[in-house]
Length: 442
Ligand code: NOJ
Ligand code: NOJ
Image (cartoon, rainbow, N blue to C red; front, side):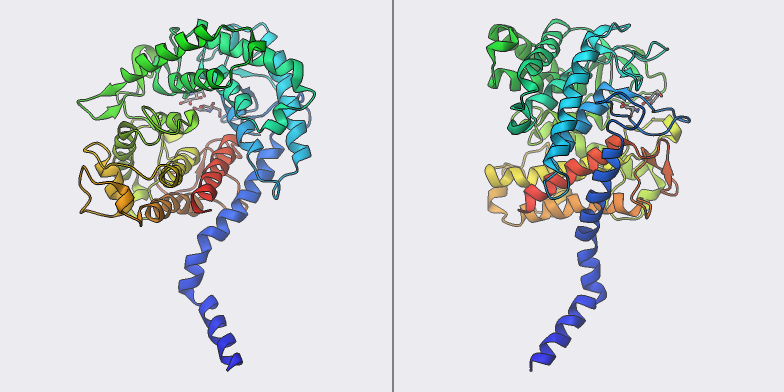
């Protein structure tokens, strides 16, 4: 009897169906470990000033051997979130301190455009060559990385004096430069941007919620900034196209970009991290934009003719390195589905509307879904969202080389890695998606 039980169990676990079923979760765990290690290599690498986060070790074609304010803030935030089982708290604490000290130095560094300067040499010296500057999402993301860092890191003795100074400087900048036209996160278009504005709003809201008089910023200034960004962000909605437009009031750059539809909007909703309301991942307009993006990328990339999932890029007329899908944007779509699943647990009431209908139909595979229905009455919704998110990670898996190295892009034609190798942000984006998956299935 017993022996038969063992044999049938063994048969079950060895069956191709089970291997298939188990392959993705196992790969996700392995890839999370590889990503952690490879991301860590790019934080304070040998020869660079402490606290420097290189965008990639690639020194030519493209040369990404620089510290970008945006990339480094996103990377550090993702690094603090890695569970203790994968990285020591000591490594996190020392990376946090290095990054905090470097941040203060960079804030005090004379640059061509002040705090909106997008990137620095690995020595910490300003990069004064030709570049798309300023990029005002940087200070907002940096402030968010500190405001959202675990309390244990914010309470380190090294933080006591520096943290309020660093936050004061970035928050003051957000308030004072709120209406300044600047370049978008893709470093292409000068104007006003959904991504930049939504992370600016997030930083001010979080600062207001965790108000600290040590910053020396009047609470009323924070409120004025918040109201400003809420108002101008609403202007990004394009009722005719049913999408949030990524860029408004274009003043230059982006010569090849004719479309408003850009994954920057989804990244913005994710990085801002609002639990609900406008510009959150529950916003029907964000979900309408995501559905429109997926449909477009499915149409334009040859590799999307076959599954799994959909490879996602930046925007339709992208030409940078051939305009391919990116790892961060594909992982962001996984993260969006996981976060929505997790949010149904804390707030089960979620109504289907005209605008979120196609996103939800895709995700739940339920054609019977109609506006007015409440997802609370669909107990399978959470699982279906996680399964749909998994499809995007399955797509990432398909184009990840055996050594787990993540470049910036993968070819729209044959899925091979393209552009900068070991892009630090690719690892960070993968890891935040995995963290979102873990909270969705816990
Ligand atoms: C154009 C690309 O689209 C952008 O993302 C990049 O950072 C700049 N060129 C600089 O290489
Ligand atoms: C190009 C991307 O468009 C930009 O967002 C990023 O900061 C740099 N590469 C460095 O990774």
